[in-house]
Structure formats: C-alpha cells, structure tokens
Length: 275
Length: 275
Image (cartoon, rainbow over all chains, first blue to last red; front, top):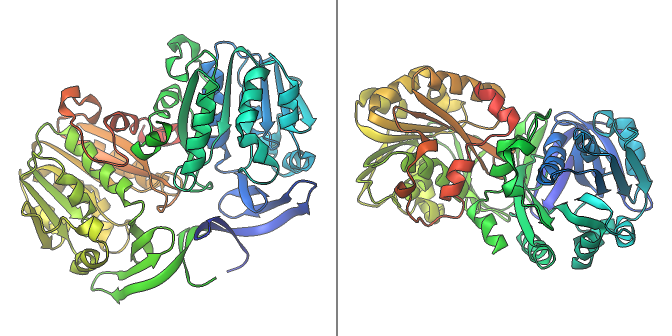
C-alpha cells in the first residue's frame, strides 16, 4: 500500500495519508521541514511532523485568519503577519484594496523558500510590491514595533519549538503596543477537543489586555479534530458589529459575510471555555 | 505501540486510533459489528469498519440530529428514528416533553443489543416507556406508514450495505407520506470534502419533494473531514424561522438556540452544493 504519513494529533489518535513522493526534507535551524506530495491533499508542508498546510484545504485557514479581522477594521492599511511563511495569509490580505503594506515576519527562511517552490498557489503573492518579507523573530519584531499596524495576524505553529513565545501574555501585551489605537489582532488558537486548556488560557490573557475579545471557529480537515479556533483581541472594533456596507464581494471558497457572523456562534462546550 | 484501528475515509486518507481492547466482534446478518475500547474516544461502535459513534464525541451528532428538527416543529408528539440503534438520538428526543411516542426502527438488532451493553450512556434511554423499539427494515416501515409522524430522523450509515435504499428519492417520497401535514424530516448526509456529489444529489431530491429544504453542519471529529452535514425536508415549518418563545432550556454540550441558526450558515463551497 506504499508510503503513508501519520500525524499523531494526541498520544492515541491521529490522521494518516498516502504520500506519493517527498519533494524535500531538511532539519532547518529551527525545525524539521518536509515538503511532500500526498494523494488526497496535494502538496503538503510539514513542520516537526505536524501538518501546516495542504493545497486542497489551505483556503479555509488562510481565508478565515485574514478576512475576519480585515473586515472588522474599517480601513486596514498596514498589516503584519507573524509566522505564515507559506504566504497563504498574505495572498488573502492582498484581496483588500485598502491594504498598502503587508509585512511578513517568519523566523525560518526555509519555510518561505520551499513554499515558493512547491506551493506556488499559496505562496505566489509573496513577490507582490505591497509585501515586505523579513526573515526574523516575530516576538522581537513585535517588541520593537509601536503604534505601527492596523491589523496583526499570528499565524504560528503549535506552542512547541520556535512558537512557544507566541502563546504568552507578554506577547499579547507587545501586540497591544505594536497596534495603532484602533488596531485588531488575531491568533490561531488550536482546537477545543484536545487543547481546551490552551484556548481558555489564551482567551483569559487576551481579555485582560484588550477591551474586545472574541473566539471563532472554522473546519480544517487536516488539523486536529477538524475544528479550529481563532482568538481576536481588538482595541475598539467589534467583529460582531461590522457595518453592512463595510463588506464587499471577495473571491473566496469558505468565507462569506454571513459566515463571518456565524463563525462566532460557538458550540456550547467551546463557549464554556470563554466564560 | 500496540493495536491501532485505522479507518480509511477515502482511498488515500484516514484516521487512526489506539485500541485498548475489543469487547465484541461479529458478522451480523447485515454488517460487520465491532465494539472496542479506544484510548482517546472511550468505547466505540464500528459497522463495516466505519466509526459509528464514540462515547467522547457522540453528543455532537445526536444533539444536532434531534434538536434542530424538534425545535423546528411547534409541537412534536410522534417521532420516528430510522436506524440509530445505538439509542443516542432517542436519548435526545426524550428531552422534549411534548414527545409522547418515539419509535426506533433499526434493521439490525445486534446494534441495539451491544449498544445497550457497552454504550450505556448513549443507549440507556431505550427502555423508556415512551420508546418503542422495532427490529425491522426502516424502508419498509416508512412505506407502510401514512400521516403518522411529526418528525422523522434518518440516522443511517453511509450509503453502502443496508443503508443504500435510505439515500433514494423514493425513500424521501415515502417519508413525505409517512409525515403528518406539517411534518419535518432530517437525514445525515455525509461530508462536503469527500462526498460533495452525494450532498448535491440528496439536496436536489429532497427539494423536489418538500417545500422547505435546508442544509446544516456540525463538527464531528471522528467522522470523515470533521465537517458533517444534515439535510432537512419540511412540509411547512422553516428551521430558520423558529419563534423565539418556542425554545426552552435543554441540557446539551453542543446545541444552543443560537447555534441552531448559525449551523445553517454554510461555508461558500458547501453553500454552492445547494444551488
């Protein structure tokens, strides 16, 4: 039956998929990187043996991370992505004509390099003139930025390896400083089936720093449990109170303005993590 | 690493989980039945090597199948479940005080027998005096029923083996006859990632028979892709137009009255299957 990749999402549960070929494998300065071609999901990027993105289902994560905060802000011009070296969030950000500058800060240049090579439909907009790519530590970049961004998106790996700092209250406090006075930030915050404690802690931390804190979900089949959460911290604008005329038509496969609202309506056991 | 169960959800993708022990395995008259104890999900029922239900995540499927149509109908008294021998949908139905009779018709008595034995938290209400359990062919029961039920729920397996008939237009026409004049029915209709054509076809078939047709979703981690769909056909009542005072507090872990509405707001690629 050939070569199969299995990700153990917990000690006792995982997903498994057929791998047609391995394009590249490397221990970078920061993590193990594998780029493989799967039979079900197209090309796939793995970091430390965890699925980061696949060609077939990447649109869900990237659309939902980008468009929810971007439509929440009335006029996003300067946007920062921490992590996200595959370029998928950048591609979605550029669909917003108000955006003048989109800065990507990923600590691992190899992720950017091999995404450009093997995930062109995802990384293809990294060369856009509005985009500035920096290979640097996102935590440090945040610490050095002040009143600089309208929207900040934390597109990190799980809180292991290089991303550990990105799930701390100190980091969220830094984001608060790096944002302009009516700025919005979003972070991917894992899944409520296996990581309930993490979601509860992040929500509490963000709530202590930002006046508006919200949790929303999306279905991502190759991520643990298939139910992913995103946490928003906002200084002023509420993602649930976007003016109807703020929305405009956008080319998406998952996000709609109706789903923008509905994605904040949580299953009871998830809602319970926010109170 | 011990014994692991793997379900290939497609030719090239699946889930895999650690099995602590096998309680029972049997080729019944209709299908292969396995009842196992898993490390992640508790006890789990498999039919023809497909996950039917697990103790840990069963509440999502059972709550969302039962409460959405039951709150849609203003006064459900007579309810039929086709399939559903594990008893989970019945347990949820009995939370509605208006229900006087809940009939379960499952073709395979062994599913009922071993669910009672190994899934007591799911099957425990099958002995309730309001419940009538029949080991019989659901397709035939529908064909023989006329103007008999307020709500019918089709809790079937995938459209293979004994459930093939339950995904035909003839079956939905039979349901239309079996329902009272303002009846509502719901069927589980698989996932949009791997079974888009099935969802499109069922939706079209139901729409040709029922004046109100709606699709809604729920996250079920042990089902293919984690994103499950349910299709509603209704003679009169619209699940999106439930009177606020129709809702009452109910003990659930997933369903809420807000999620009732939000679960009908579909990701764009799913919405596209309904037009």
